[in-house]
Amino acid sequence: RVVIDVNDLKKKYSAWSIRGRNVVEALRGASLQVHAGEVFGLLGPNGAGKTTLIKILLGVIRSSSGSASLFGAPAGSIAARMRVGYLPESLRVDRHHSARSALRYYARMSQMSGAEINRRSDELLELVGLRGRDRESVRQFSKGMYQRLGLAQALMHDPDLLVLDEPTDGLDPVGRNEVRKVIDRLRESGKTIFLNSHILQEVELICSRVAIMSHGKICVAGRIDELTQFD
Ligand code: ADP
Ligand code: ADP
Image (cartoon, rainbow, N blue to C red; front, side):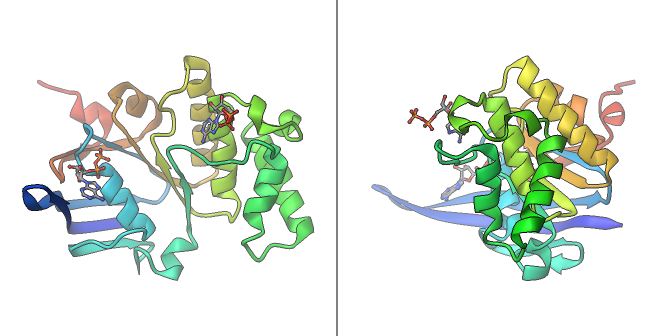
């Protein structure tokens, strides 16, 4: 079953500078497919177009041409958005909140009842290993704890697909390990995960399949062991 289907996707940005109009081709015909249950890693240097691709998948911006769909629905449509959870590169949480109140605040935008929000929060705080710390101010949290709270938030509406923007970037080894453990648990529970990173070693540890992006295109995609055999 194909969860993410991207075909010949192009995106041009125009920016104005003192020299006049400047067109940047961030995506130049990117194509990729991600299947249900995969942990898929998008690798590439800064400027390759990874963030642009993620923004199109989430429906934050529109492509210039080509197609992108999630679960067979166009990226950005309500049907697609309802099934995606997103972990931004850096989570904004009011530092007076606790982990629990941050989740409750976030879930208020959904149709969930108070009881449902509490039940769901318990379950997710347990999953991300914050159950014992859920009532203290997030001000005390390490970056790794913030990331795990972000994962809980992204899971609140029980999406089938999670899009994670550099989930372990800037974490110490302990923090990275804990975030990886949560990602493993999510994979075991059947979620499809799409993440981007500029660190090969991270992607090797977490992902079942990888695509390498460069200058707005996917150069290669495959299983890590396939991509690292050179004989
Ligand atoms: P990555 O996430 O791989 O670092 P991006 O998608 O952020 O790559 O950027 C791809 C290219 O598009 C870069 O050259 C970047 O400078 C350019 N770009 C990204 N966003 C904008 C924007 N809003 N306006 C103009 N150029 C942009
Ligand atoms: P202050 O304004 O007193 O610095 P902040 O709430 O900005 O308080 O930050 C408190 C701590 O929480 C800082 O150590 C910071 O690293 C961390 N922090 C705040 N926001 C984020 C975030 N979005 N992602 C990760 N860590 C954060």
